Image 1 (spheres, rainbow, N blue to C red):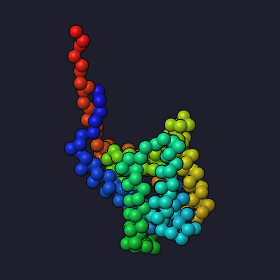
Image 2 (image 1 turned 90 degrees about the horizontal axis):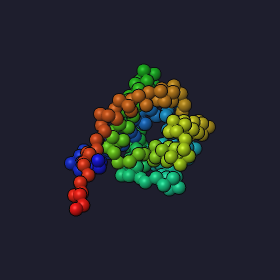
Image 3 (image 1 turned 90 degrees about the vertical axis):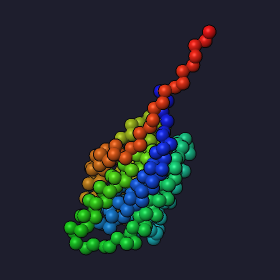
Image 4 (image 1 turned 60 degrees about the vertical axis):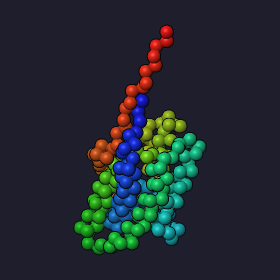
Length: 212
């Protein structure tokens, strides 16, 4: 059986991809505003942003581009979703932070945190389910796993521990939100990904006439 993508789903996939990436940036901004700890990569982004005096979304774009360059020796091929991820998530995060109000009340900050984590799960399901290629950080993980022969779990853990420690040393926010994100983002993605996944279409191979 040959697997093809149904071109009739292309408009839906494109819309889903870009909505997902924009929501991913909003999810990150909510977690930043909560001030209760970020996911490992955003701890790194925030730490660099504080040292460089740039917006965290701008650092998301720069780091994403650098990570994408790391795909070259790994022979990873970026897709539309990969390139779009590099730009749109950071832009969305910067814009969201412009209008999201600062909250001092703990209950409001907890609501930001929980909303951001759940929204991140939804956004992840949307952009991965659109089937336009992984984000630069996920592609780095899968590429390293393939080239080193190590498991995805081991490579992901190693990468996230490294960026978390580096970001923390640079002044990124580590807290209960960091732990909560690590615990629930996997299950949330597992729930939402099937809801948004665009299934490939299986088509039978054309049978050749027997030789006479």
